[in-house]
Image (cartoon, rainbow, N blue to C red):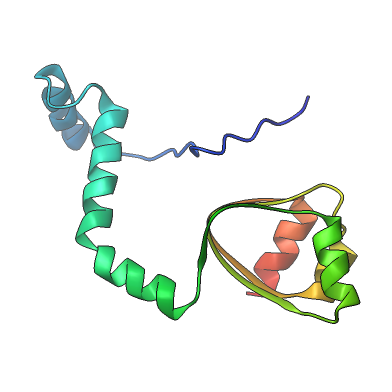
Length: 132
């Protein structure tokens, strides 16, 4: 079975205490939010907005790229050929394609700091965690 990548959203699971959940349900039942997920998305947007200045400063200071990116074998082969060591700071969705080998990563990546979602073979994810 082929895994489908949703480029728009990532599913999160969280635990909420029973009292807070009940309060959320009151807001939903009274039309403040269409459902619990709508409430959570609104709360997340509110917190991100409150901290926007700090986030933007951090993004600029650490030179993060933002968006959706796919890295395949050809990208790492080119880095190896050019003797270029990659130091990646990324926010969003970064996908390392299945044609990439761990050996390519070891030869071409100094660090891969991904905030958001990294999709890669397990051995590559494990290696990238080890070099943080």
